[in-house]
Amino acid sequence: MRIVLGVSGGIAAYKAVEVCRRLVDAGHHVTPVLTEAARRFVGAATFSALASDPVPEGIWEPFEGRIAHTGLGRAADLVVVAPATADLLARYAAGMADDLLTATLLATGAPVVVCPAMHTEMWEHPAVAENLATLRRRGVRVVPPESGRLAGGDEGTGRMAEPGTIVAAVLAVLDASSGEARRGDLSGRRVVVSAGGTREAIDPVRVITNRSSGKQGHAVAEAAADRGAKVTLVTASALPAPSGVDTVRVESAAEMEAAIDAAARDADVVVMAAAVADFRPKAASDQKVHGVPELVLEPTPDILAGLAARRRPGQVLVGFAAETEDAVGRAGRKLERKGVDLLVVNDVSAPGVGFEHDTNEVTILGSDGGRINVPLGSKRLVADAVLDAVAARLRGGSTAGADTETGDTGESR
Ligand code: C5P
Image (cartoon, rainbow, N blue to C red):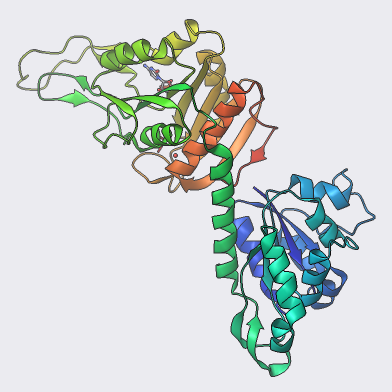
């Protein structure tokens, strides 16, 4: 997500440096905007070194080829002002736009979070209280100051909230606003999702399988249902069925193929998150094999390639790829070979990524050349990022510009 971090002139500006670093660490694109007074407390070079962008010069200089005074606010997913001085709050409440920060605040339609910091007398002044009440009425979120040591050795209420409190408030507002934008965006759509690792019988006792847990596929199914889709989940995992999802339990690649093919006939979207076994014993023994069996293997049908060959017009097909080396390079070739619209690739050799973990980090490749990097996050966050790309395709849009970073942040399945 794109965050503008506004910094106005108070001693708490030094804490904004930590807010900046933590938001960048959480995977967000942070552009710091400093008032003239803020520059007296902390140098622009400090923010430029930590943020995603250098500190823009001011209202008269273009920023990344855009008109800075409106461009920054328009592109932002959230603006947070920390610290927000009494003067900054007054200028914002009055609708003034006499520097880049206030102009950005007026030009944005994104949620705004302000973190006031000032001396106790100023904080208790009715003018400040009225300005904050005005801003609150307009939907601005306020992270209230705390009590403690102030500039000049004074004590009292007015000290800016700690960076951890501010970052938590910002992340909660971002979550709520992206949830709002996603609510119902797949309503009326039929989505089929596969999950888990198939089990291919050697005999009635033994199987060939893989390390897939099914967590990522189940998260995709749950997220799609939450976004209004009618979802069929075909799963080889023993995980519980997500609520509101029509769940079909299968074991082998052959069973999965039959269930997917039937469900895909009238589907708008098919997400193949399952780790389908690539090979299976040519003939499973009816009886338990004693001794070491002579296994003759054969390839399983490629379910995804079959879907691509018979796809309905407008149907969006999503494949997953778990790789251990040159993940994105291999996935690019797989995307073409399988004929899918989107390929979600994860490097399962990376820490916290893939099989059995509750977190994932993926790159979503589009057949249109788009590429979205989803930083390490919960499998649900990855599921929503995949469905964002699907929803964009259903709307006729592109995957995303090259190397888009999402703040949002799956198992390799
Ligand atoms: O070729 P690879 O197994 O890496 O491809 C992974 C993708 O293809 C996944 O989306 C998986 O669900 C799908 N697949 C399939 N049928 C197979 C093997 C993989 O649909 N037999």
